[in-house]
Image (cartoon, rainbow over all chains, first blue to last red; front, side):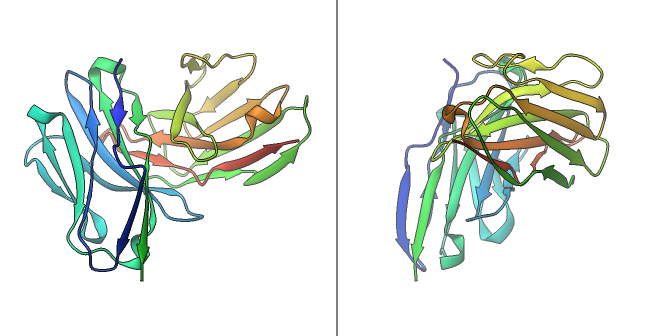
Length: 114
Length: 114
């Protein structure tokens, strides 16, 4: 079945540590890839997106993600996390092989210790 | 970008009753969607709200339980009918921009069924 997988359900880091959150998808066809963030008590917000072109995309707040087509992956990275990055992070995919619906991974809850 | 508002922001309802959630988008968008986020879980697509016609439901969701209306390009409602405690969730309205494929989310409606 077509799906989006996030391997880390909970991540705990200290401030200034580097972050990498994994995301893999199983859709074929043309894909558009997204990372969303949900800060405690707030809206879901778009962090970054990949549609085409340079596979390394930069988003808000120092986040970046790399699309590796051969690995069906779109991992999220940040070189140095801050306490304010504590949130839940969702990877999501739109595929023309899946009716162009936005489908979410299970989410990763990140806690950054001050 | 689109700004999405939802009413009510939260409600506590009795088993067997129905609740209608309203969603307003501040700009004309191509597509509107309704998602559910159960406690501690990711977002699941309930349906696509189609303007002037019946909504398109995902597997596991039916019109009798979740009737949806979309009378124009900027407004939609979702009704949760004959509620049971299992319907306790956050219900989110979402809208997609035709040009950019970016999808925006409302703040959600937190529903508790007792």
